[in-house]
Image 1 (cartoon, rainbow, N blue to C red):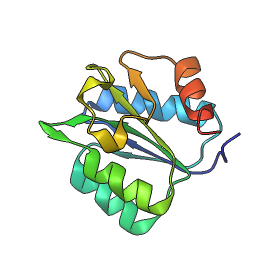
Image 2 (cartoon, rainbow, N blue to C red):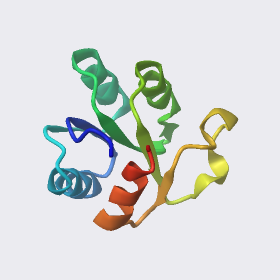
Image 3 (cartoon, helix red, strand yellow):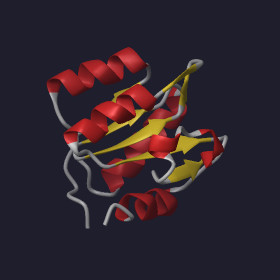
Image 4 (cartoon, one colour):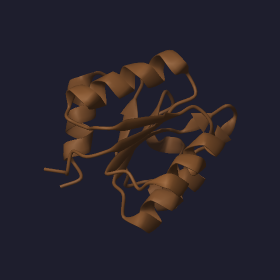
Length: 116
C-alpha cells in the first residue's frame, strides 16, 4: 500500500478539483493541496514533496507533463486524469495509470493502489 500522506491535485476545473480533494481526504491523504494552474502546481512543488498526485492532463490548453517530470524526478507516484484516454501520452508516460473522467473514489483508490 502506498503511504497515505500529503497529495497534490492538479485540475483546472474547480468543481472537479474539490471533488478529487474530498475523495483523497476520504482515502486518508492529509493534507491535500489543490492547484488549478501549472504555475500553482510548480509553486506547490517548491514548498513540499507530496506522497502522491493526481494530474489532469489538459490544463487550460497546456499539458501537465512538465509537472509529471518534476514528480518523477522526486520519486512521487502519480496518476493522470483525462477525458481523452491514454492515447495522447508521450512515450515516457505511457505506463502511468490514467483515470478516464468521470471517475469515482473506488477507481481513484484502485489507480493509487496500483503503485505497488
